[in-house]
Length: 387
Ligand SMILES: *Cc1c(COP(=O)(O)O)cnc(C)c1O
Picture: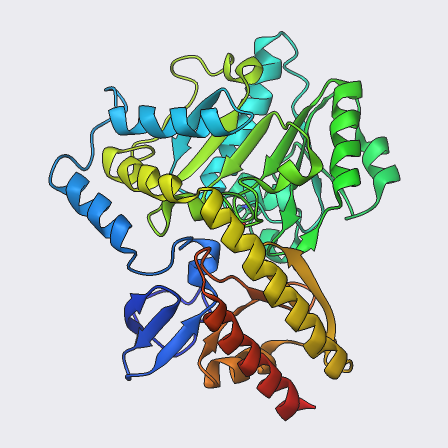
């Protein structure tokens, strides 16, 4: 009997080793891993460059308190600022912490300018911002909040696409709109560029902040460094996590100078966030998210999606939609996807579910064409079997 709590429905499979896009199970089988720890291992398993970076830092110093200056974190923050809209960064350990911090920054900003009542955050109903108490109430999902009352106040919700409701929700107490640029857990729902732009305009008009949650779609996954770059907008606050650590837990909040001024000493902190070991890994990951890698994401994405669309044409009764941007790809089925995912796994392809009968496909950003072709072959085979 497992001593682990039962809060996960785990598949009965374990791995002893990973190599790039592949995982090797304890029972000697080789799997093509298109989950990659849910968009976390941006550079695949056992990346040589990352192994070198983590070993080098491990021999120097792992952890010191944020009471001291941490040069590795200074460097990573500077690199993030140089590449993006942001002027400053706070490091955390996870996505949920990053989104919580984003909420704290938004509220503290209005507090700091003498508007403490401006503290409500508008979110998309059933979006995903993590599993902490504030993050589940930001989502407003019944499934995630059930049994975890009392409800955390301060969040208002509109349904995906209901722009009229969104406009109506904004009042004098609204501090920010917080949305995922691409809804990952929600079923790889891409928010159109015109819509992101309209929300930015709305925020400007109402003098409220725009928080774009890029925990899943950020750091090159979309084919641009941030997915919101497609819409050519500048957000005020952006939580990141998954891809930036390449498998090492790192979260961060990126923000403009305007809002970061509110985060004076003592307003926020973390024991582990931004420690030297994590920052060394983050620096190594970021150095690899270059033009060449982004070109690979875009090329592989085109190849993958165009061929998935061909499979959809061949099996119009099974596949309802192929969607996504870059290497954040969703295959929406007409029926529940559990059996399909199981069959893919039996054929040595690992994928993961998302809402709305979607199968999420998340290759590493340095995936090879031959690996995508292998996945296409397996997906085609499973469609044929289930047809
Ligand atoms: C995964 C995810 C989170 C939460 O990240 P954790 O590291 O699991 O806390 C938050 N927002 C989005 C968009 C995510 O995909």
